[in-house]
Image 1: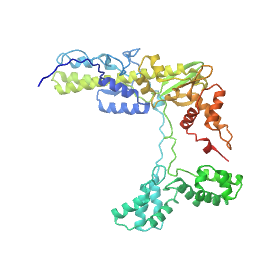
Image 2 (image 1 turned 45 degrees about the vertical axis):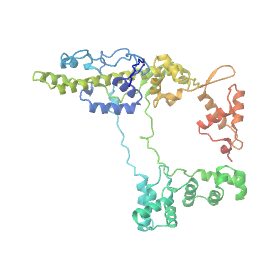
Image 3 (image 1 turned 60 degrees about the horizontal axis):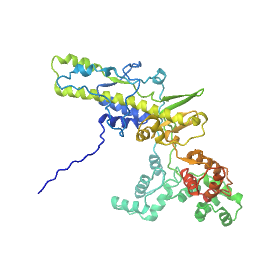
Image 4 (image 1 turned 45 degrees about the horizontal axis):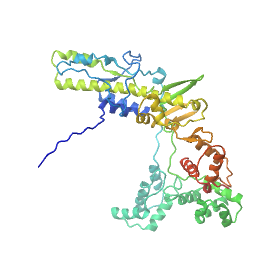
Length: 487
């Protein structure tokens, strides 16, 4: 058997552990970063949270080259001293220049003394329903079935599993003898518990249950029940003229009936968010100070980090007595890991600020007036700050900025462009906003089709096709003209 030798040239890109750590920290929002730092503080004994607030001069004024996976010859974040195992002593790495390395994050006394309001405990919906089951006149078998039904309710309050399969499984597992008819009766009673409409199998069943138990004015309640039971298809298609004819009522009377149905809750299982849950912590804060923009990284909750100097004293005392090599290796590894982590936090801060500065410079008109968003893609920012597109994507994804006009996700400022008849470039987000304004001002009795909207935009100088209008409308979750018709 003959063997052949061949020569091959190949270019590979390998990331060091420091670079991987940097890229992972870069894509974390501020709350997740805070948790990640706490985990690292618990895992690494040489890393500690600094109580002092003074800034350390060892921090470089300009960061080193960004650690992007697309660059060749990437330099590691922290260079180890080239020395043999014997010549690298504890004094070498304990007296390293970074032994007092800290992140220059200042925490004011106001932040430290900020009161944390307790979150009220809430009873889950499942427990509320199980408690209400006890007040129904049910047999033991029916109670078991009720518990199974409650356990299969999804987060919106609907019973997505087939009732026949629930009964079948219960009869096999518990040895019960329940029929589908009895199961329907139990389900009917559960649907009229609080909140009414819970455990419905579809929207029609959900709305009917709420109407039946609700205290609504007649004859609107009776008409609404008849409409949902007998003319559901016409109702979903908004054929109001036909519905009024079937019910033998006027359009004005039908309007009152439709308004009653629209007040019902289509998702009875959906809970309300508490003020503590329903908020976003912005990663950046941008303020306009007489035409000059002040960009701040919202990292007040991120603790300052430094290397623990106590280990130096500890190892100095034990040096004369001899230190086991495994302890020495452990301390050295944790020391390097702590330096890498601190340096990655610093580089993350610098990279995020560079990206945010570039966004503000390009979208200056928006940050001044809240309007006039310009078309911008990741490559535009990457070319300005000299980083890879993947780095921009990591910074932008899941990050928010607080402005004078509200809180926006960073991805909001990136959009494709459309060209007007004059050659001017317009952001597609501005076009979407204009489409929404046109739809909001349309005649509710005669909604505008996508063709008409496209024609209106072309008259204003925006070249856009009907299918593009339809795509933008669907992206904004606006229904077609037929379903936008109102009474």
